[in-house]
Image: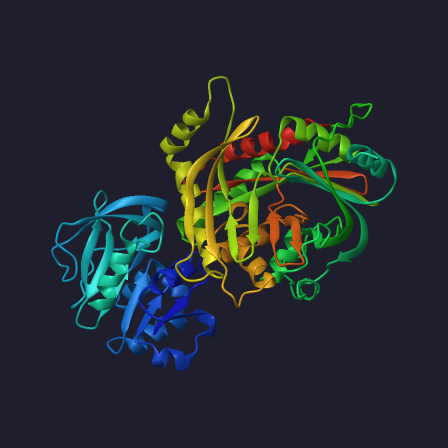
Length: 185
Length: 384
């Protein structure tokens, strides 16, 4: 079972719909997380959402508690949430992408996706990861083809994955494939 | 008595009636046996808590009316701060005992110019201030798109049927409606359908993007214009993903599909950039849950919905009343049709009120949006 933690976003149920393709999904608001379900879940997904990771201490707590124990996947805000808890700085960016389809490229750090393959994805983010960011076992595995901004990371040791873009958006052409790969990695 | 005469007779009486655009003309709803005034979340929950019965399919087996903006906020547990208000009804539904079709309205009043002295509630300078504040919130990621509402008000006594028939003549919008009751009237040429539910099928048809029909503009040029315009596309994409999301709350997993993606719909004076999203409703979901998932309609609020509503409400000093609420009907067999109340005039206590909004995204320009609001309002104000 996959437990999706919603950060009051207007895209979370697209994530629920997408993950339902692969497993049973339960979704609750970050303010009303059920500990029993959390314990039982095989994977935890931190949803997209408005604002900054530091606004969601409850989700940070969940991340820290289950890091290394369960598969954890972060999408957009969730991606930032995980990195923020690993010491990264999340900052405003000059060019903001909301509702924008852009091309991203897989870097040679990925153990899941083919090096240099390109995906068309939908983006909705004001903030980005400030680089350089170095943390052992966390590798940036996808980047924007034009701006080079970090678009995905993998931590294959602890099975922690994140996408800065939205695999569930109708703007993302191979979203189901991306999710399938990280759920089976 | 033929149907059009019935309309004129009704109009000259003091009986309330409603007109709603249908596929090939209009439907006229009247002889109301019940009028349900909704004041609170609780009232709405009680109102929607009737068991649908598939066998009840008479033309009059329905409630028709509207939910105002405030009620729709309360329904999803968002409270509005204290605002200036006309104390207009938060929501009303009627049970008609007569429903008839009319092909065209064919009504003309001995038309005399009315007071056109409309006052706007926020001027360009204030608008720009609000705009800049919201842009900062977009930079910080608190919202991705937000619609600033401006209001125009004027003292006047209007003949709603005269207004509605003239409005329909030059802008026959698919979700147009009018309500005439004893102490108020609403005249609307809403183009936007929010909920179309038949059996277990549901669809929503958001509009994001409008272009005026000028000399050489045709359907394919309009499409090219939108496809090229990155800002319009981004705004539209956001709404499509948001509406997919709202449907996904109540639909069978994997049944939600974008069935028409970014097409052009042609109206007499303008082109709209439209998508159609469909899904199959889960068996366990009732109409109250559907309304809570879909309303207030995202395309007129911004995205993400909850946070954006809070930002908007804290900003707005005046109650939106009907604006960005929803008008439509719920049939006793469970089917529903609701629009989004935009491009509307509310007449209450001899005051006419027109509200309009346009979106702030990261690359919007305050002046342009302020003027777009004015153009939208002007189409209605020109009726006076």
